[in-house]
Image (cartoon, rainbow, N blue to C red; front, side):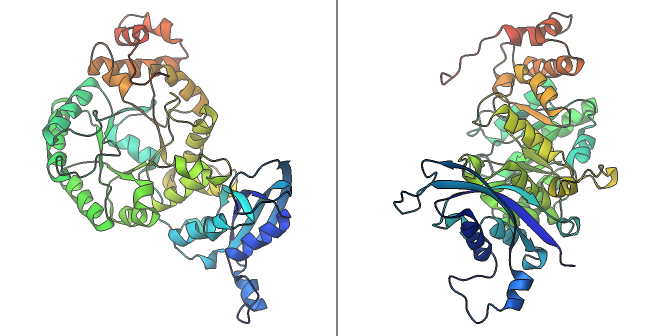
Length: 434
């Protein structure tokens, strides 16, 4: 029996929704604008997309997106699920992505189209590399269990020399973080090339580990052309590094997949530019299909934003994104209740980053229902009144309080929690008024 994959969309149209769905199905499989001789019944039967379901929703008064026409017709919305045979795609993530969100996004008949959910057969998903390290492998690198990995970002974001970057890394490591990453804007610029930055930072990390026995992850941003990324990876590996970072939307699915097949290190996925794929309610996609595509490509850690309010997504959306990352792929893609297989753990570690402070630790823990995450803070660590080390301790203490179910003021009042108390009392000066 032919295996099929399916996708559910929210669509908007001034025409009859079934007609729009039929046009979508044709546009993304066998159809042309008119029936031609080569489009035989056999070709349609073997390769055509099917409409699995269509539920008409409410009508609205105005178009969400311009369609180039003036119309007094009602604007109708519907939720439609299409399916395709897997042999249309083969083992190609670019073609899977093109099938899911290709020419149908520009159809004049649609004034809105959003990919909400993706389902793939387990055997089809098994063709792709998927995460090699994921949650368990990330934890193993630093030997941290039972709590989140506390992380930070090199600040200032750009402009530091290799030596200055290494000094910031030293301060964060000595302060007690488990994870450090380059900013998404810092990759291989002439003033701080990876060929100099990686050795400088790794000297600091090796020295610290030899003195203390404690391991730290540093995610070097190697975003570049595909062959260059592989060379950057090899440099990090040769210097004893343990993580690489990639700007996913900038390099693309195929490049990430190619890097994953080459890489011996975890891939930290930064989703810079994600908002343009999702911020409009009737365009782009939800996070579930987005994370599924990049998990199929092999990303081990993936940003989901943070509850601190720096970015536009709601707390519920952010927490659901984390849960999507932590749902095994077969269950995520098929909606089945299969238990997690510890031997083939393809979960991706969610990274909470973006305005995260001591105040979001408890809501993050309660909302996500887990400590399987990286909690990355910039200003909350660098802006602590008593310095970087105290900033690191305050975040760790906030998470201790969250896991213990103790309110921050009560935990800060206990002996030995001065860093948390100072953070609670501090009112930082922000560059931009809220």
